[in-house]
View 1: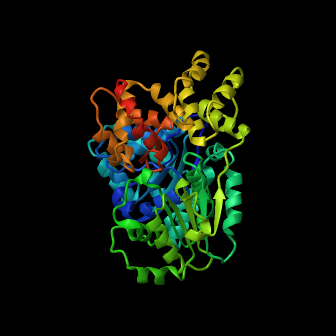
View 2: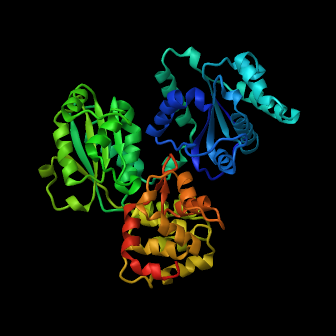
Length: 498
């Protein structure tokens, strides 16, 4: 189902770029396919807010080139859009020149009609080609000839579209390299311990917590665990923390039900109706940043969970002095600091893109990594700030750290990274601290923050590369609570030329 002609080491912004005809599949097949990819933690380019025309813009071109896999969904009206045809041409060029993997889905269309441009598919193609230059038409025909011979799924061969989507999502997941997962140092051990704690194979309903200070990696462990076990549950929901999505003013009941029962943009049932729906199904809930009121709501709701349903809560220092059993949590997984070897690995992945420092940098890396306590967040920020720097800049880092008085270790790492930003990047960083941008797609934020003199989207990517912000699989902008808190409290920074 996949094809690539070569391979090379490149930086990727996305795992998947889907190419499709919106009028055929956007509200049906595509919406379920994207949800399936999201449930596996697969980072997919979403074209929300992009105005379509006869020519694809630079943003689309960049997204195609920066995606590991292109999934081409060939449907009846795909050939009726010059946008789709130019997109396909660009994808096939990336396959030839960059070794991009291309996967195909023939949705209510015969592959022979695609390769020969016959039938209704061919008629649509001829209409699109009207008054186009012969050279352009030949490039489009060549792209169809190439893509149609790549083995793919045929919707007409499946009795169940849901089963077909599940198969395609699994195929996509299998094509992705394991290196990104491997870079989450120690994650396999954390996940194995959590699976043992929640007793995945048991019919017992369990409420467990993941506890640790900010920046220790609670959300990273939780997401890895969710991706691994969610397929075992009929209803599931992962609630991101407020610092990722912004505040939901409709409350946890609305948020949970819209996620679990897929009631987006619909009336949410009351608690009694909710209970009757949940009682007969196996439910998986992951929630970050839970308030005391929300915790009480969850405890009331959990009385109606059955069949080995599991609830996993990410808990910070606010519950440190309270007995866990007094607040209804069965067990707590306390996240330990990484070992010195693991800390160096985390730092090295951020600084060098590999698990250990290259020749000539080992002593420098050990010295700098030891400047702070082994918080994964701090190590990532510090390592990212030194990526690509000269040895002279590495040797200056320890002395610079000595000037950061009265700061915590994570604050020192953030300050070090911040000091290395240009004035424009500092200004953009401050702008993104506004909660209006949290959970917003970076394409939308780009227009809201537009500057005439430089590329805001590249600026956002730079801040993400430095781990000062992060981008979700859908391209949403997120800023860790620790970064927000430090930036808000260190008001003296604002007087330093921003």
